[in-house]
Image (cartoon, rainbow, N blue to C red):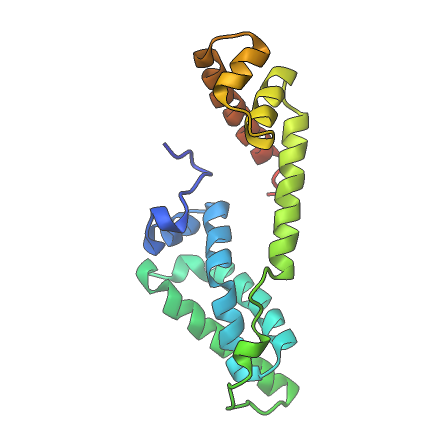
Length: 192
C-alpha cells in the first residue's frame, strides 16, 4: 500500500500514473520524472546547441519550466513528447540569445553522452545515503540494530533471532516496524 509520498518505480506503474501523481504535488513522482527524462532532455538540447555544458544548463531550465507548468499538461500520456518540445524550444531560444549557430551534425553526441552516473546522480545518491544514516541515527537502538543487521550486515532473520534471543516472527515484526520508522524519519529529513 502506498502512502501519499511513496511511489512505485517506473517498472511498477505507467508513465501516465507518475505524471498524474506529480501533477497532484507528489515530489517523489516529479523526482522520478527527472530521473527518467534527464538524459532525454540533455540529448535533445545537444542536438540543437552542440554543446554539452549548455545542454546541462538547458536541462535545469527545462525541469524548472516543467515543474511550474506541469498542471497545464492535459494529457499525461503525452509527457515524453511535451518535455522534448520544451527542451528543443529552450535550446533554440538559448542559441538565439547567445548568437550561436545551431549545429546539424549529430555524430559526436554518443561519444559525449555519459554512460555512467551524472554528477546529479552522484549528488542525489550521496544525499540519500546521508538521509538514511541520519534516519538510522534517530531510531531506537533496537530498530537500528535490526535494520543494520539485516540490510547492511546481510544477517538472516534466523541469525538475528539468535542474536536477540527472540522468535523469528518477532524479528520480522521488528524489521517491519523499523522500516516504517526509518521511512518516516527520512521523510522528515527530506527538504520540502
